[in-house]
Image: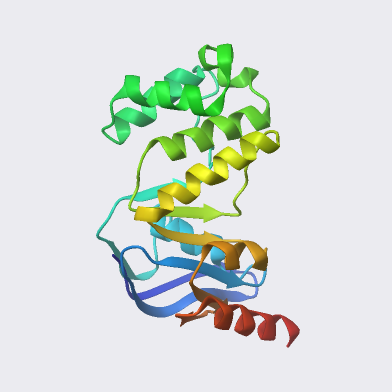
Length: 218
């Protein structure tokens, strides 16, 4: 379960305060598949980073009664001078996982071959994404955060990645940000629409999409 208790988030700008969330109170039960919708700059990514704990609200609190993933496929904390395997071991220790097991899982999943023992600075952006996606699938979380889902590689690897992800979601919750309504509809059953600092929850994703589209047309 994830609880928002009177959560307010804003940023100072030259034109005054930019309010992203204004006094949001909401409880998301375990297993919820929530799509976050809103126009550019509405605060969708900020909301995910607050849930993940990397951004703090100005007021209120977010209570997480579960394990929360980093954003799916995110490799921003990789150390470029460490090998792929060394980066995986570092993450395994942080999350209390068996290091050898996670390295073996990611090596098999990401299909990077000898590059697992090469420093990250030798990786292409696609290879880094494959390593990050493999780590995301190698650790089972109660909730997955997704900011624009991507599946890299050839068609077969993309199919495998999305199949593994959907399998993880059988026993986990999902908070997804995407500009693709088709993607939101495919993965989510409920929605949260952000508009001018207000967050409106819909227990039906189609109703959330319709509200978002009305906002965009206004």
